Length: 369
Image (tube, rainbow, N blue to C red):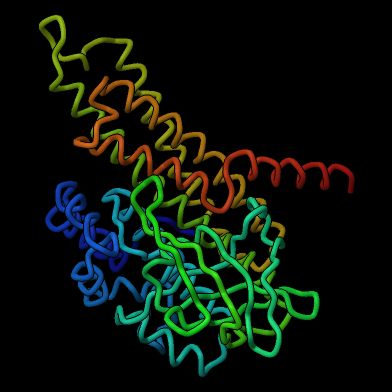
Protein backbone atom coordinates (compact mmCIF):
# COMPACT_ATOMS: atom_id res chain seq x y z
CA UNK A 1 0.00 0.00 0.00
CA UNK A 2 1.23 3.48 -0.93
CA UNK A 3 1.27 5.72 2.15
CA UNK A 4 2.20 8.86 0.26
CA UNK A 5 -0.97 10.87 0.80
CA UNK A 6 -2.87 11.92 -2.30
CA UNK A 7 -4.32 15.40 -2.70
CA UNK A 8 -7.65 14.59 -1.04
CA UNK A 9 -5.97 12.88 1.90
CA UNK A 10 -3.56 15.79 2.33
CA UNK A 11 -6.47 18.22 2.31
CA UNK A 12 -8.23 16.14 4.96
CA UNK A 13 -5.09 16.14 7.10
CA UNK A 14 -4.56 19.89 6.69
CA UNK A 15 -8.17 20.76 7.49
CA UNK A 16 -8.12 18.68 10.67
CA UNK A 17 -4.79 20.17 11.75
CA UNK A 18 -6.17 23.68 11.32
CA UNK A 19 -9.38 22.75 13.13
CA UNK A 20 -7.46 21.38 16.13
CA UNK A 21 -5.08 24.34 16.27
CA UNK A 22 -7.97 26.82 16.20
CA UNK A 23 -10.97 25.11 17.81
CA UNK A 24 -9.48 22.28 19.85
CA UNK A 25 -6.69 23.81 21.86
CA UNK A 26 -5.79 22.17 25.15
CA UNK A 27 -7.69 24.88 27.02
CA UNK A 28 -10.82 24.30 24.97
CA UNK A 29 -10.48 20.56 25.39
CA UNK A 30 -10.48 21.00 29.15
CA UNK A 31 -13.67 23.02 28.82
CA UNK A 32 -15.29 20.35 26.62
CA UNK A 33 -14.37 17.63 29.12
CA UNK A 34 -16.48 19.31 31.83
CA UNK A 35 -19.66 19.07 29.77
CA UNK A 36 -22.25 16.45 30.82
CA UNK A 37 -21.35 14.09 27.97
CA UNK A 38 -17.62 14.64 28.35
CA UNK A 39 -17.31 16.19 24.88
CA UNK A 40 -18.74 19.03 22.81
CA UNK A 41 -21.99 18.48 20.90
CA UNK A 42 -21.07 21.50 18.82
CA UNK A 43 -17.75 19.96 17.80
CA UNK A 44 -19.51 16.69 16.96
CA UNK A 45 -21.92 18.57 14.70
CA UNK A 46 -19.00 20.41 13.11
CA UNK A 47 -17.20 17.14 12.38
CA UNK A 48 -20.37 15.86 10.73
CA UNK A 49 -20.69 19.04 8.67
CA UNK A 50 -17.10 18.64 7.47
CA UNK A 51 -17.79 15.04 6.44
CA UNK A 52 -15.39 13.53 8.97
CA UNK A 53 -18.04 11.17 10.37
CA UNK A 54 -18.34 9.54 6.97
CA UNK A 55 -14.70 8.48 6.77
CA UNK A 56 -14.35 4.83 5.81
CA UNK A 57 -18.10 4.33 5.25
CA UNK A 58 -19.80 3.49 1.95
CA UNK A 59 -20.17 6.27 -0.60
CA UNK A 60 -23.76 5.29 -1.38
CA UNK A 61 -24.71 6.35 2.14
CA UNK A 62 -22.69 9.58 2.13
CA UNK A 63 -19.32 8.30 3.27
CA UNK A 64 -15.94 8.39 1.57
CA UNK A 65 -12.41 7.10 1.80
CA UNK A 66 -10.99 3.95 3.32
CA UNK A 67 -8.44 2.76 5.83
CA UNK A 68 -5.82 5.40 4.96
CA UNK A 69 -8.33 8.19 5.55
CA UNK A 70 -9.23 6.60 8.89
CA UNK A 71 -5.53 6.58 9.77
CA UNK A 72 -5.24 10.29 8.86
CA UNK A 73 -8.20 11.22 11.05
CA UNK A 74 -7.13 9.08 14.00
CA UNK A 75 -3.63 10.55 13.98
CA UNK A 76 -5.08 14.04 14.27
CA UNK A 77 -7.46 12.87 16.98
CA UNK A 78 -4.42 11.64 18.91
CA UNK A 79 -2.55 14.87 18.30
CA UNK A 80 -5.45 16.95 19.61
CA UNK A 81 -6.55 14.58 22.41
CA UNK A 82 -10.00 14.77 20.84
CA UNK A 83 -12.73 13.51 23.17
CA UNK A 84 -15.53 13.01 20.65
CA UNK A 85 -16.48 9.31 20.09
CA UNK A 86 -15.21 8.96 16.51
CA UNK A 87 -13.62 5.55 16.94
CA UNK A 88 -16.58 4.02 18.79
CA UNK A 89 -19.18 5.39 16.41
CA UNK A 90 -17.48 5.46 13.02
CA UNK A 91 -14.61 2.95 13.11
CA UNK A 92 -16.15 0.26 15.35
CA UNK A 93 -19.90 0.79 15.09
CA UNK A 94 -20.00 2.06 11.55
CA UNK A 95 -17.50 -0.57 10.45
CA UNK A 96 -19.56 -3.42 11.92
CA UNK A 97 -22.70 -2.21 10.20
CA UNK A 98 -20.83 -1.58 6.93
CA UNK A 99 -19.34 -5.08 6.90
CA UNK A 100 -22.21 -7.08 8.41
CA UNK A 101 -25.45 -5.13 8.26
CA UNK A 102 -28.26 -5.84 5.83
CA UNK A 103 -28.97 -3.32 3.08
CA UNK A 104 -31.92 -2.04 5.11
CA UNK A 105 -29.84 -1.65 8.29
CA UNK A 106 -27.10 0.19 6.42
CA UNK A 107 -29.58 2.51 4.72
CA UNK A 108 -31.28 3.25 8.04
CA UNK A 109 -28.27 3.73 10.33
CA UNK A 110 -25.22 4.85 8.35
CA UNK A 111 -26.70 8.13 7.02
CA UNK A 112 -27.60 9.04 10.61
CA UNK A 113 -24.06 8.26 11.77
CA UNK A 114 -22.58 10.40 8.99
CA UNK A 115 -24.94 13.26 9.85
CA UNK A 116 -23.95 13.10 13.52
CA UNK A 117 -27.44 12.00 14.55
CA UNK A 118 -26.57 8.54 15.86
CA UNK A 119 -23.72 7.54 18.16
CA UNK A 120 -22.86 3.85 18.44
CA UNK A 121 -21.04 1.86 21.12
CA UNK A 122 -19.88 -1.75 21.06
CA UNK A 123 -21.17 -3.51 24.18
CA UNK A 124 -19.06 -6.64 24.24
CA UNK A 125 -16.66 -6.78 27.20
CA UNK A 126 -17.77 -8.66 30.33
CA UNK A 127 -16.27 -9.26 33.76
CA UNK A 128 -13.63 -11.97 33.60
CA UNK A 129 -13.08 -11.72 29.85
CA UNK A 130 -9.90 -9.67 29.95
CA UNK A 131 -9.16 -9.42 26.19
CA UNK A 132 -10.70 -12.70 24.99
CA UNK A 133 -13.27 -11.98 22.29
CA UNK A 134 -14.96 -15.37 22.65
CA UNK A 135 -15.81 -14.81 26.33
CA UNK A 136 -19.54 -13.96 26.27
CA UNK A 137 -22.09 -14.80 28.96
CA UNK A 138 -24.90 -12.53 27.80
CA UNK A 139 -27.65 -14.67 26.29
CA UNK A 140 -30.21 -14.07 23.57
CA UNK A 141 -33.49 -15.90 23.05
CA UNK A 142 -36.22 -14.94 20.62
CA UNK A 143 -34.72 -11.47 20.17
CA UNK A 144 -34.53 -10.75 23.92
CA UNK A 145 -31.13 -10.15 25.54
CA UNK A 146 -30.09 -10.67 29.15
CA UNK A 147 -26.67 -9.96 30.61
CA UNK A 148 -24.19 -7.33 31.76
CA UNK A 149 -21.55 -5.53 29.72
CA UNK A 150 -18.75 -3.62 31.41
CA UNK A 151 -16.50 -0.74 30.36
CA UNK A 152 -18.51 0.00 27.23
CA UNK A 153 -16.41 2.72 25.59
CA UNK A 154 -18.58 5.80 24.99
CA UNK A 155 -21.53 3.76 26.21
CA UNK A 156 -22.71 6.68 28.32
CA UNK A 157 -23.39 8.78 25.20
CA UNK A 158 -24.49 6.11 22.72
CA UNK A 159 -27.85 6.09 20.97
CA UNK A 160 -27.35 2.54 19.71
CA UNK A 161 -25.53 -0.47 21.13
CA UNK A 162 -24.06 -3.35 19.20
CA UNK A 163 -24.32 -6.20 21.70
CA UNK A 164 -22.69 -9.63 21.58
CA UNK A 165 -24.72 -12.52 22.96
CA UNK A 166 -24.84 -16.30 22.94
CA UNK A 167 -27.69 -18.00 21.14
CA UNK A 168 -27.62 -21.61 20.10
CA UNK A 169 -24.13 -21.98 21.56
CA UNK A 170 -22.60 -19.39 19.23
CA UNK A 171 -21.95 -15.66 19.38
CA UNK A 172 -24.23 -13.34 17.43
CA UNK A 173 -24.43 -9.55 17.29
CA UNK A 174 -27.55 -7.50 17.95
CA UNK A 175 -28.57 -3.88 17.51
CA UNK A 176 -30.13 -2.52 20.71
CA UNK A 177 -31.70 0.90 21.20
CA UNK A 178 -29.70 2.42 24.06
CA UNK A 179 -32.75 4.27 25.37
CA UNK A 180 -35.24 1.41 25.15
CA UNK A 181 -36.82 -0.49 27.99
CA UNK A 182 -34.72 -3.22 29.53
CA UNK A 183 -31.49 -1.25 29.09
CA UNK A 184 -29.86 0.26 32.16
CA UNK A 185 -26.49 1.98 32.01
CA UNK A 186 -24.23 3.35 34.70
CA UNK A 187 -22.05 6.11 33.32
CA UNK A 188 -18.56 7.10 34.46
CA UNK A 189 -15.30 8.55 33.17
CA UNK A 190 -12.18 6.56 32.39
CA UNK A 191 -8.69 7.49 33.58
CA UNK A 192 -8.09 9.60 30.48
CA UNK A 193 -11.35 11.54 30.82
CA UNK A 194 -13.38 9.63 28.23
CA UNK A 195 -16.95 8.46 28.82
CA UNK A 196 -17.83 4.83 29.45
CA UNK A 197 -20.65 2.85 30.98
CA UNK A 198 -21.65 -0.50 32.41
CA UNK A 199 -24.78 -1.77 30.70
CA UNK A 200 -27.33 -4.18 32.16
CA UNK A 201 -29.74 -5.84 29.73
CA UNK A 202 -32.98 -7.29 31.06
CA UNK A 203 -35.18 -8.76 28.35
CA UNK A 204 -33.96 -5.99 26.08
CA UNK A 205 -35.12 -6.17 22.47
CA UNK A 206 -32.38 -6.77 19.92
CA UNK A 207 -32.27 -6.91 16.14
CA UNK A 208 -29.83 -9.41 14.63
CA UNK A 209 -26.82 -7.80 12.93
CA UNK A 210 -25.23 -10.03 10.32
CA UNK A 211 -25.72 -13.79 10.26
CA UNK A 212 -26.64 -15.74 13.37
CA UNK A 213 -23.67 -17.47 14.93
CA UNK A 214 -21.06 -15.46 13.01
CA UNK A 215 -20.55 -12.72 15.57
CA UNK A 216 -17.07 -13.80 16.63
CA UNK A 217 -15.63 -13.46 13.12
CA UNK A 218 -17.30 -10.06 12.76
CA UNK A 219 -15.94 -8.94 16.14
CA UNK A 220 -12.43 -10.13 15.29
CA UNK A 221 -12.41 -8.12 12.07
CA UNK A 222 -13.85 -5.00 13.72
CA UNK A 223 -11.43 -5.12 16.66
CA UNK A 224 -8.46 -5.54 14.32
CA UNK A 225 -9.57 -2.44 12.44
CA UNK A 226 -10.06 -0.60 15.73
CA UNK A 227 -6.57 -1.57 16.88
CA UNK A 228 -5.09 -0.27 13.63
CA UNK A 229 -6.96 3.00 14.23
CA UNK A 230 -5.69 3.15 17.82
CA UNK A 231 -2.14 2.69 16.52
CA UNK A 232 -2.60 5.79 14.37
CA UNK A 233 -4.06 7.72 17.30
CA UNK A 234 -1.07 6.75 19.44
CA UNK A 235 1.31 8.04 16.76
CA UNK A 236 -0.43 11.41 16.81
CA UNK A 237 -0.17 11.58 20.58
CA UNK A 238 3.49 10.52 20.55
CA UNK A 239 4.32 13.22 17.99
CA UNK A 240 2.55 15.82 20.12
CA UNK A 241 4.17 14.77 23.39
CA UNK A 242 7.62 14.69 21.75
CA UNK A 243 7.15 18.18 20.28
CA UNK A 244 5.93 19.53 23.62
CA UNK A 245 8.99 18.09 25.36
CA UNK A 246 11.43 19.65 22.89
CA UNK A 247 9.70 23.02 23.27
CA UNK A 248 9.77 22.78 27.07
CA UNK A 249 13.49 22.01 27.17
CA UNK A 250 14.17 25.06 24.99
CA UNK A 251 12.48 27.37 27.50
CA UNK A 252 13.21 25.74 30.87
CA UNK A 253 16.50 27.08 32.19
CA UNK A 254 18.84 25.62 34.75
CA UNK A 255 22.38 26.70 35.63
CA UNK A 256 21.87 29.74 33.39
CA UNK A 257 21.01 27.91 30.15
CA UNK A 258 18.13 25.97 28.58
CA UNK A 259 18.11 22.37 29.76
CA UNK A 260 17.77 21.31 26.13
CA UNK A 261 21.47 22.09 25.71
CA UNK A 262 22.49 19.34 28.11
CA UNK A 263 23.76 16.41 26.08
CA UNK A 264 22.21 13.75 28.29
CA UNK A 265 18.75 15.23 27.71
CA UNK A 266 19.40 15.58 23.99
CA UNK A 267 20.15 11.86 23.85
CA UNK A 268 16.87 11.06 25.58
CA UNK A 269 14.90 13.26 23.19
CA UNK A 270 16.70 11.67 20.24
CA UNK A 271 15.56 8.27 21.51
CA UNK A 272 12.00 9.60 21.78
CA UNK A 273 12.18 10.82 18.19
CA UNK A 274 13.40 7.44 16.95
CA UNK A 275 10.62 5.66 18.82
CA UNK A 276 8.08 8.01 17.27
CA UNK A 277 9.35 7.44 13.72
CA UNK A 278 9.35 3.68 14.15
CA UNK A 279 5.87 3.80 15.70
CA UNK A 280 4.61 5.67 12.63
CA UNK A 281 6.03 2.97 10.39
CA UNK A 282 4.25 0.30 12.42
CA UNK A 283 0.97 2.23 12.33
CA UNK A 284 1.25 2.36 8.54
CA UNK A 285 1.91 -1.37 8.58
CA UNK A 286 -1.21 -2.02 10.68
CA UNK A 287 -3.35 0.19 8.45
CA UNK A 288 -2.16 -1.66 5.36
CA UNK A 289 -3.41 -4.98 6.74
CA UNK A 290 -6.48 -3.76 8.65
CA UNK A 291 -8.88 -5.14 6.05
CA UNK A 292 -6.89 -8.21 5.03
CA UNK A 293 -9.28 -11.07 4.26
CA UNK A 294 -6.89 -13.57 5.86
CA UNK A 295 -8.00 -13.27 9.49
CA UNK A 296 -5.00 -15.08 11.02
CA UNK A 297 -2.48 -13.05 9.04
CA UNK A 298 -4.32 -9.80 9.78
CA UNK A 299 -4.46 -10.50 13.50
CA UNK A 300 -0.77 -11.36 13.70
CA UNK A 301 0.36 -8.26 11.82
CA UNK A 302 -1.84 -5.86 13.75
CA UNK A 303 -0.80 -7.49 17.03
CA UNK A 304 2.83 -6.89 16.07
CA UNK A 305 2.13 -3.20 15.47
CA UNK A 306 0.04 -2.74 18.63
CA UNK A 307 2.71 -4.36 20.79
CA UNK A 308 5.51 -2.25 19.36
CA UNK A 309 3.54 0.99 19.56
CA UNK A 310 2.47 0.20 23.12
CA UNK A 311 6.11 -0.02 24.20
CA UNK A 312 7.04 3.11 22.21
CA UNK A 313 4.15 5.05 23.76
CA UNK A 314 5.17 4.04 27.28
CA UNK A 315 8.79 5.01 26.65
CA UNK A 316 7.96 8.42 25.16
CA UNK A 317 5.34 9.14 27.82
CA UNK A 318 7.69 8.33 30.67
CA UNK A 319 10.53 10.35 29.17
CA UNK A 320 8.26 13.33 28.51
CA UNK A 321 6.95 13.40 32.06
CA UNK A 322 10.45 13.06 33.52
CA UNK A 323 11.92 15.77 31.29
CA UNK A 324 9.13 18.11 32.33
CA UNK A 325 10.03 17.47 35.97
CA UNK A 326 7.32 18.01 38.55
CA UNK A 327 5.23 19.92 36.02
CA UNK A 328 4.85 16.73 33.99
CA UNK A 329 2.25 15.28 36.35
CA UNK A 330 0.16 18.41 36.89
CA UNK A 331 -3.29 18.84 35.38
CA UNK A 332 -2.33 22.21 33.92
CA UNK A 333 0.06 20.79 31.32
CA UNK A 334 -1.04 18.67 28.37
CA UNK A 335 1.86 16.22 28.72
CA UNK A 336 0.26 14.29 31.57
CA UNK A 337 -3.02 14.02 29.67
CA UNK A 338 -1.21 12.62 26.64
CA UNK A 339 0.50 10.05 28.84
CA UNK A 340 -2.84 8.99 30.31
CA UNK A 341 -4.38 8.62 26.87
CA UNK A 342 -1.41 6.60 25.61
CA UNK A 343 -1.71 4.32 28.65
CA UNK A 344 -5.41 3.71 27.92
CA UNK A 345 -4.75 3.10 24.21
CA UNK A 346 -2.34 0.36 25.28
CA UNK A 347 -5.04 -1.25 27.45
CA UNK A 348 -7.82 -1.03 24.85
CA UNK A 349 -8.45 -4.29 22.95
CA UNK A 350 -5.27 -5.88 24.23
CA UNK A 351 -2.14 -4.61 25.94
CA UNK A 352 1.49 -5.24 24.96
CA UNK A 353 1.69 -8.60 26.72
CA UNK A 354 -1.52 -9.86 25.12
CA UNK A 355 -0.42 -8.93 21.61
CA UNK A 356 3.09 -10.32 22.11
CA UNK A 357 1.46 -13.61 23.05
CA UNK A 358 -0.51 -13.58 19.78
CA UNK A 359 2.70 -13.03 17.80
CA UNK A 360 4.69 -15.65 19.72
CA UNK A 361 1.89 -18.23 19.36
CA UNK A 362 1.79 -17.57 15.60
CA UNK A 363 5.56 -18.03 15.35
CA UNK A 364 5.38 -21.33 17.26
CA UNK A 365 2.55 -22.51 15.01
CA UNK A 366 4.56 -21.67 11.90
CA UNK A 367 7.60 -23.45 13.30
CA UNK A 368 5.61 -26.58 14.02
CA UNK A 369 4.04 -26.66 10.55
